Amino acid sequence: MVVVTSGRRVVRGATRAALGALALAVALPVAPAAADCGTVNPLARGGGCEPTASASSSARGGELYQTVATKQSRTELSAFLEAPAKKAVTARAWARAIPLYQALVVARGPGSAEAKQLATLWTLAGQNERAAEAWSTYAAAVRDAKEQAAALAEAERLAAIEDPFADKLALAPLVAEARRAFALGRQAYARKHYGDALVYFHMGYALAPELPGFLRELGATYDKLGASAQRRELYLRYLVQRPVGPNADAIRAQVANDPVARERLGTLRLASSLPCAEVYLNHQRLPGKLPARGLLVAPGSYKGLCVSPAHEMQLFEYATVHAGKTATMTFRWGIVENRLERPFGRIVLENPKAPGVMIDLGITAAEVGVAAPADGRKLRMILKDDAGLRTEERMVTIEPGRRLVVRW
Image (cartoon, rainbow, N blue to C red; front, side, top):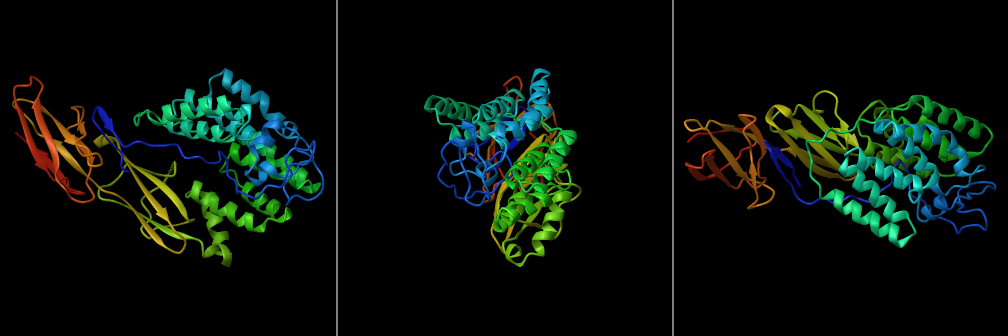
C-alpha cells in the first residue's frame, strides 16, 4: 500500500493497527499461575511472586519480562516512575509522559490501567497510528468485556483518521530515569534477582532506547534465566523495531558473530526514483543517504516513508524480509508540474492505489510529487480553472523519476 499526499487532500487505503508489544520483548510459554503469586515463568529460578492482578492478567501468553517471577511486586519495582509520569501528564508534556507510561506498562502489563493511560496519551498527542496500536494492544490484554469493546472501537476510529501532515511526536529520551532503572537492574542482578533485573532493564530500555548498556545487560540476564535462545530473539526483535542507529550497529555485529543467529538475517535494499528529503524505516529516520549495498536486518515487516516537503509528498512503501533473502523497498514517484496559465488552473489526479478515487494536487506548489503505478497504467487527470469555465480530461502516464509538465 502506498500513501500519497499532495496539495490539500489526502487519499489512502484503509489501515488497521497491528496487535503487538509496546516494548521490546520475546514471547515465551507461560506456566500455570501459582496460588497467591500471580504468574510464574518456568525459566525463572527460585521463588518470588507476581501479586498484581493487572500484570497477571496480561501475562497469559505474554513476554518473559511480564511472566518471570520477581522478588518485589511489579508495583514496587516501578514505583519510582509514578510521580514523574503524573507530573508530565499534568504539564501535558506528551514527549516525556509517553516514555514514562511505556516503562510503567513494561512492569505492570498491557492490560493495566497504565496501558489504558498510555493509549490515551498517544491519542491526546495527535499520534493516531500509534494510538490505534496502543488501544488494540490494551484491548487484547484487558479482561473486562466492556473495556475491550470500547478499546477496540477507539482503535478502529483512530485507524480511520488520516492526517499525514500532523507532526510526528519525537519522544524525549529520559536519560536520568533510565540510568536509575539501569542501576537498580544492576543491583538486582548482583543479588541474583534476575527476574527483577529483567524488568528494570526493560523499563530502562523503554525510557531511553539508545542509551548504551541495556541490550548488553538484557542479553546477560536472559542467559541467567536459562533463556539464551531468547537473547538471540531479543537482538533480532530489536533490529526489526530499530533497524538503524548506534545500538543497531552494535547488535548487528553481535548477531553476525553468532552462527545460529547470523543465518536468520536478511538484506533490505532501499531505492527511490527521485531523492527523498527524509527517509524513515519503522519510525526511525535514516541518517545520510540510502545504503548502497542494502541494510542487514532481521526477518520481519518493514514500513518505509519517503518525505519531500518541497513537492508536498509523503510516500509509504512496505517490504517483508525473509532469512537469508534480499528484499527491495522502492519509492516509485514522479513530479507533476502545473503550467496551467491564462487562465490559471488546478489539477485533479487519479490515485494510483485506488482506481476511480481522485486527488486534488492543490495550488500551493507548482511541482507536486505523485506515486507512479507499479503496472505503468495511465491515470485519469482532470484540469479545470477556478471559475469553472474551462475543463479538460486526459489520460496520463506517471513515470518514476520523470517530470510531467501539464499545460492547457
